[in-house]
Length: 312
Length: 213
Image (cartoon, rainbow over all chains, first blue to last red):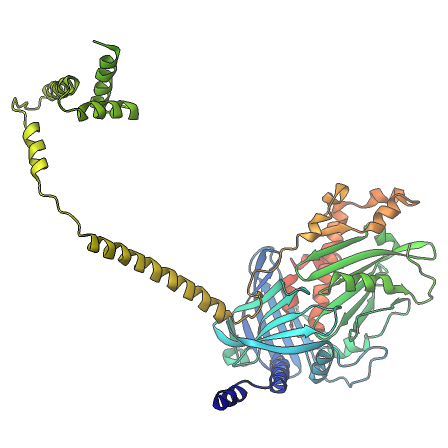
């Protein structure tokens, strides 16, 4: 009996060990996304629909080049090159610095503030052995993620967003992936590609001076804020390092065409509401991979800096 | 000739022509089963005559010798190969064993498939089709895209002072706006999360962004 018990204690890793392993896995995944070149076929599934895309991710010094081509349905190609230099942490005012790019060393700390990690066994994705990991939210304001991380490269091969009772809402999954090899020496053809300077974006991480978002779920922070001078539209983006949502405040003119609504498809929620300010009616919309209740609460918290705004 | 005999004759004729119904066939077979009955003998004669006439019309050779009784007797004298009950049980159990092993392979296969997925929950299942968002669609809301539900505040507003604006909402505008905010959000998301370009997979097409910008 004693031998049996000893065997159990030896073979079953302690909770602390498991947590450490899960933490290391997340850190390795973050590092892999920043350093490895990879390309592959990825499926995206939501609400009973399946889409297939081809993806390319190349790292060249401080440049990250990414391309995604839709292989079915309406044609679509998205290419991006990002200059991802260290612009000096803390440069941005009113927003957390270093929140950009994919994930960085501080991303791990952010993730641990909002999610707990649990290793959920071994799986096989895109013909590769992978470790399944559950990222469980620490509150009800965000959604759980179930991911599969490649045992060999530590790249994320699958990402499933679940609802709060554990049902899959949407799934990204590689069906084939190539890591390194020819991709490491492949030249980047980025003619006509959008180039974003992360430093430039970082400097734009300032709250807008007219509209404010009074409440966001804990650990969500502003990553981008812009005001469209022609249309008068204001956009603010937030993330907790994993989930993201965007707040839109439409001009009076545009608002006249938009009914208040709620929309759910896959993991994406959109909630649109009306806000009155100085007799004018504005449309406030929140779109993101967050629970509908969180989106509604965020919408309700949007106001004008002058605090004269009110819900109709 | 009685009515029954007449019907029997018609049934036999139909059987001869290959146009008999089930009823005709049953009627003829039933009568032939009564081997010594007058009807049975008459029918056998008639059957033979019909075939003789048919053969003559086709220019085939017609034999006057009736082999039918000899053939029937020969068949009757044929040794019957009885199946050993034990063999019968074993053979059927063999079939059962094959079926069972196929079922076992299927079950093991499915279990192995499930295990290979390694997912403790039902995350391996297909992504959830959200039906609740459609449930709330009543009345004029039906004109909006699937997944939409107009807010309660709209109904409050439409019966209050701004009822004129109710009619300014068109399906086209609503769809365009929804497509726009979804695309715009997805285009923002890559900067702020671990999934890189993956959120772009959510975008239906590039034009949804540029059209609005």
